[in-house]
Image (cartoon, rainbow, N blue to C red; front, side, top):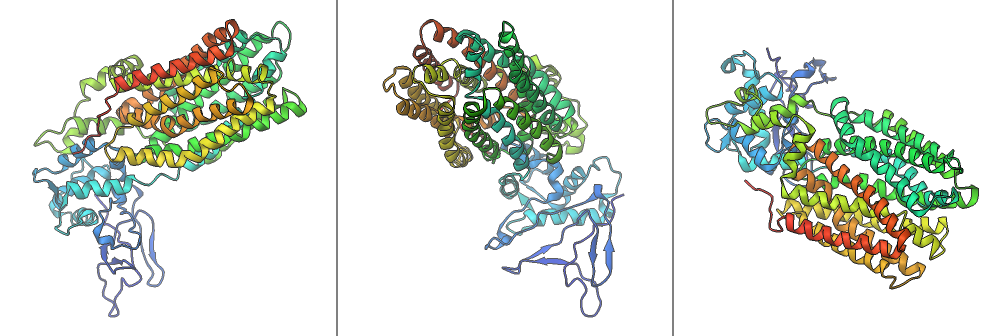
Amino acid sequence: MFQRCCWTLSSRVISRNGCRHRPTIISASALTVHPLRCIGDDVRNNKNGISNQINHGQRYVTSSIKNEGNNNSNKSILPNSLSSLNFKYMETDELRKRFDAYDKNSDGSICAQEAIQLVKDADGHSNSSIDIKNCTELKACAEDIIRSMDKNNDQRVEWSEFKEAVDHAATPVSSRVYPISGTMFINFTGQGVMVPVLPFLARAAGLSTSELGMVTAASALARIVSNVPAALAAEKFGRRPMLMLGPMLGAAGMIGFALAPTDSYAFASFCAANAMCGFGSAITMAGCGLYLTDISTPLNRARTMAPLQMAGLIGFMVGPPIGGFIADAYGLSIPFYITSGALMLTAASAMAFLPETMRKQETIIKRHVESEQVVEGKSVTTMSAAPIPKTTQMATTTLDHWRTMLTKPDIQGISSVSLVTGLVQGSYAVTTIIYASETLQMSPSEVGMMFTCAVLVMAAITKPATDFSDWWHNNSNCRSLLIAPGLGLAALATGMRGLEVFPTVLPFTALFVMSHVANAALVTPNVTPFLVDATTEAQRAQALAMRNMAQDVGVLGGAISLGAVSQAIGAPEAILCSAGLQALAMIFFALRTSPGRRRKKV
């Protein structure tokens, strides 16, 4: 049986004559009266000694209505009591199906009687034997839900009011994004420390350019092997364990670099150390990507990713000059010890500050069943007990997921972008850094400052770029119209570096910065949101793994192939090859994603 709803007590619940009235909340700005909501904690009126206890599993919480300078009666507010139904994480078409399912008489609105099913589903009592007609408490909670979303005061919730309430709840970015961003900042700073140092350490150990490419490829190969298992492990064990284990493996790899010999075993030692770093990176990014996907909504995905992107940019901004300075002052191996310590600190901070965000798989399957089997005359309760659709049964293996997703032109296009992005990243050590150090005679600290300049400008434009991305998407525009021009501009700047139009330090650095700005403004803020928008919730873990796989294959291919080109022909020619591949990726992406594609609106 449902326990009696507990009403939040205002300071004037008890009238002067001692009679108890139904309590209300008064808006301070407009004296707008709202029915009080049920809460799941002790509610005590210290003045009158009143205390009521509500069972934690049977609570009904409505979002507090904040005074924003406007009359709050003109806003539809989604009750917190419905948060377990995850409405704010749904795309518009799926949300409309859920609305229609609760609209049992198909009159285009949900009344208080129909909202009873909402209350029961949210509280997990879909199979309850309660007599609804006699359960006044349950009906009162349903009426409360209707009032919170009823914008025109007709005692019904129409689709537009329901959608407005969900959008209002889905717009703010979850505060949980900041702890993981702080944790990953340490991780990225540690990685940034080693960026300008590794090529110099490899050269000091006697490695050739092609061998350096193989060392870089070892990390990518390790990520390719571990991306899918890491995603599956994150789905089984949760995101938090991945965010602890990954940095620990990376720390072990950094120690391997610091202790690597300079004799005939140097090449094997470097490959083993970088492979360990690759395993750690794959596990970390699997946990991080799913963590952010868990807490993002269709209306704030780019902005949810922004703090993490900003943490990465700042980490890579401060890391390279620190690494270059330490290498110049204290030796090439010292930065790797520092990086190892930073990664261990990352694991410790993840354990201390990051809560688990994984939702139970049964909830995802239930939502999939409800959204796919909305049939007239069936209640949501009946649909929740329906068999899992054939499509879900077929997608029980990773190969099935990937085969299904790769039939979509959008996934093919965005995968090509991830592939070429990885290729360019993998080629930096054997093209850009080799050219800067051996042709332009730049020191490790100067190379670090070049990377810092690029990251500094990227950090400055990340916030406006992600805000614009969400605004662009929420106005029914496709993010592909931003990604393609960004690829073209990056290819142009990279090509000018390869042509040696300005073969001096400052112009080379400026062009390097320009290519990164194009990526940061138009490509990077849109890749993951584009991918998430194009997949279902059940597919997203493997979609993110597939994106990581494509990028790692690119790193592997870029490090090996462009390393060979750099050694055989020259670093400028290898840079030109990477620019040409960026241009091809832009063309393929534009052809596979429809520029006129619009987000569905119901």
